[in-house]
Amino acid sequence: MLYLFGLEMPFNLSEIPFHFYHMAAFLVATTVVLITTPIVKKIGLLSGRFDQPGGRKIHQKPMVRLGGVSIFLGTIAALLTVWGLGGFGVLPPDKEYEIWGVTIGGLAFFLIGLADDLYGLSPFLRLFLQIVVASCAWNVGVQINFLTIPFEGLVSLPDWLSLIVTVLWLVGMTNAINWIDGLDGLAAGVSGIAAVVMLVAGLFIDQAEAALISAALAGAALGFLRYNFNPAQIFMGDGGAYFMGFTLAGVGVIGLVKSVTTVAVVLPYVILAVPILDMSAVILDRLRHGASPFKADKRHLHHRLMRAGLPHRLTVLIIYALTLWVGSIALAVTGLPSGLGYAIGATVLLGLAGWQAWRHAKQ
Image (cartoon, rainbow, N blue to C red; front, side, top):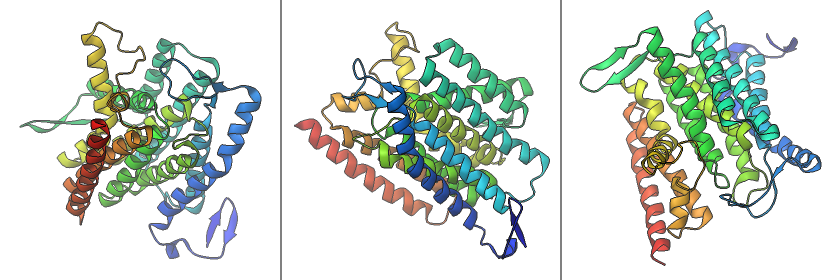
């Protein structure tokens, strides 16, 4: 018999199909987000927790920035439900520490972002807290122990270098997702697509536990688009962006990089190439012009596309297509059956999006 939170259920665990847990995680997260987001919005409006328009901001009216609360609640509710159903099984201690490291680390990053949304933390305090949390996650097993070096293959890292590389990855990816959160639905859609790709890749390379976290995050992110796609009714804020960025980075470590193959080690960097390259290009451009790399401006890809004459929605859809394209390439290189077909299909889709962008840019 199966016991769910102490209650006896009328079926055996062995009778549940394997992928049921991943589907359950996705659906529970989506449902919770769809239910809680209007409530969070109402609370935000009543308490005056909203973002005013102006400056580099695109929105034209006050917007509640607490949507990350719903994303967090949906993801955690999904994981607790799957855990109660026995979806995580009996994990070895090292794998259990990794799962807890990503989950509790995600909670800590969410709280850092939420505190910034509510009280406005300084950039240096945020960065310091992020480094502390990322270091704690490394200490419990969320570690990058290998890097792929051209012509050398996999290279094992000493602990001190593993700590530095892991913290840079976790903190950098968190802020990369936060930095692309500049248009309605952009960060949620990019994160949702990346999470779906990580889900598929994780299942294919037999990392089912990490894939469960991906499924929950994908459901929460894509469910949030119901209220966040243009014209947005609510923003996720730093809390949501930090939570999704850290969770994606953490799953990339425990679910993909932990698989000691050259292909698996590079997968998270390919899947998340769009926010990584966007952040890298912006930092380099700021430094080249003598500006602070941390000072917000309009140098991001979505800003450049809109300056080229593309409308808001088309800009977001093009970046979605780009994210899906690099994700499909990642699936193809894993050897996934029909992976090449997915990559070809995504390439055609990206080509169509590019053609639409070219048409609008000419006008």
